[in-house]
Length: 195
Image: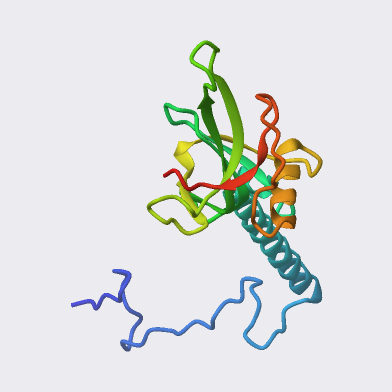
């Protein structure tokens, strides 16, 4: 009977299968070093990838800061809450994290109805009050959820609010003896003793 080799072909007489030498199809041999041009191409691609990763990182960091990057740390800010009474706080605003702002050195508007005589119309005294002297004794820091802030704005140093705060601090934290009772101009901050 005739013997078949692995390819189902008849084996040569004597049962020996000829061995072929390996064929080189133009591929690099194990002993060849890569060409300089190939290394330069790999380095260029790696540099582009590193640059793209850096740009994405910078973009992500900038986008997470968003509007908070516009807070001027050297100035006071007015923070308008979206509460029913439209409360406004003045102080040094910073971003605590993605959900909260932090407000320090806080002042707020206090409106008092004054009716000296029953025959006269009541008037409003508008003044700034320093946070911290209320009956519940809060510290001079406030954490505000960002979703409760309608908007905030940096204040100019020569504005009425910052001028009143500066005067309050110049007087050692005591309100001035001569306070303007004008409805349109805020008075210097007072320590709130009514609450």
